[in-house]
Figure 1: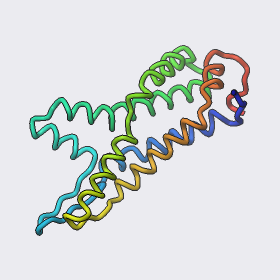
Figure 2: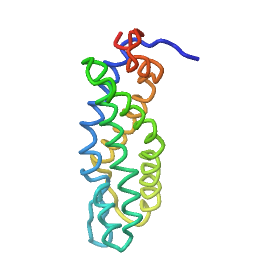
Figure 3: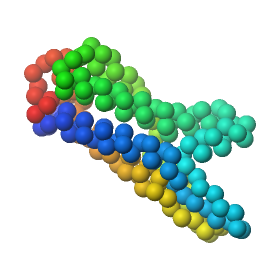
Figure 4: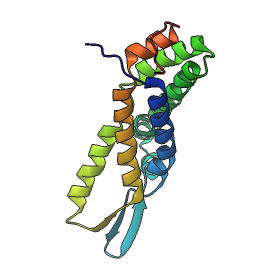
Length: 172
C-alpha cells in the first residue's frame, strides 16, 4: 500500500549527506586491531581489498571492492543527484536516468553481507587473539543504518512522481 510521506526529499537529502560523510571513515578507519603473539595489525575495508589483491586474488578483490565500496558510493551519489534535481528543480531528465541506475544497483551494494563477515571474523578470532574494535566499525555500522533508514524514508512512488513533474508534494 502507498502512504504519502511528508518532507521526503529534505529528509532523504539529509540522510544521503550523512551517509556520504560516514563513507570515508567507514572504509578507511580501522575496523579492528588484532594482537597475536606480539604482532599487531589494524584492518580497514580498504586494506582488506588491497590484501586480497596482493595475494593473487584480484578477481575476489574486485568483487569485494565493488560490493563493499564502489557500488554503495555510486548508489549514494545517484541518490544525491536525484534528490538535488528534485529539490532544485533542474535536470529532471538526468534525475530519471540516475534513479533508474540506482534501482539497478540496489541489489549489488552488499554492505550488510560485509558486516556479517566482519562480525563472524570477530567472533571466530576472539579466542585466538586480543582484539579491539575500531572507530571504523562504528562508522561502518552507522553507515549501514543510515542507508537502511534512507531506503525507508525515500519513498520510490513519490520520487518517481516528482521526477516526472507531477505535483505530489514530494518536498512536503
